[in-house]
Image (cartoon, rainbow, N blue to C red; front, side):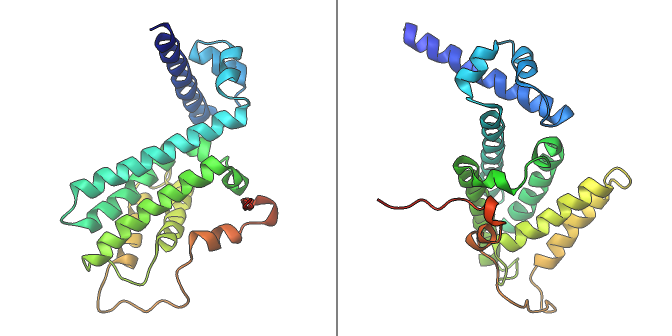
Amino acid sequence: MEERHLRADAERNRRRLLEAAQALFRERGLDVGVAEIAQAAGVGRGTLFRNFACKEDLIAAIVVERMHDAVNAGQALLDEHGARPEEALFGFLAELLGRQQVDRGLFEALDDAWLARDEIRAAHADVVGMVDRLLTRAQDSGAVRPDVGAMDVLMLFKGACAAAAAFAGADSQMIDRHLDLIRASLTSGSAAVPLRGHTPTLAEIEHGLPVADRPVERQAG
């Protein structure tokens, strides 16, 4: 019983640290110090470092959690819109964009080097996998053109994120417009123009990162 109580206390402290750090990072970016995070969480610095060996581990844990939250949201949309899977796909993109806006201070500060961390790389692959499942279901229904892949969709989505960051303050409808443009470009139709080249894979995107930022391949043995 005592051990269970200690585990529960430890999990509560970890949750407080994650929630406090997320709130501070959203408000002020990643320059917030660990002492301030610990104070906001109501724990000591020792407790913080028992849970996260360094600030980078704390940041990574938040990023992974937010990605997992997005995947769960995608599955919920897929369950809700089973008969119209295209609504799940485009609803998921809107959900991702909303999350990116909320967490802008966190995600804009992360460069490609963070994808070299195993836990973030795995969570990112889960997000890509969810997009792929949503896209495949929408393609199978005939609602979305068959010659696009998950990375095509995510690259379009990044353009919408950039537009949201640059213009949302001046025109609140800019975000919705770009989501509509994404939908129009992906929707099936007799007038759709064939695409040149091939849809990139996640492995090709990772290979295209600068050498210093590429995830290190594990050797067998």
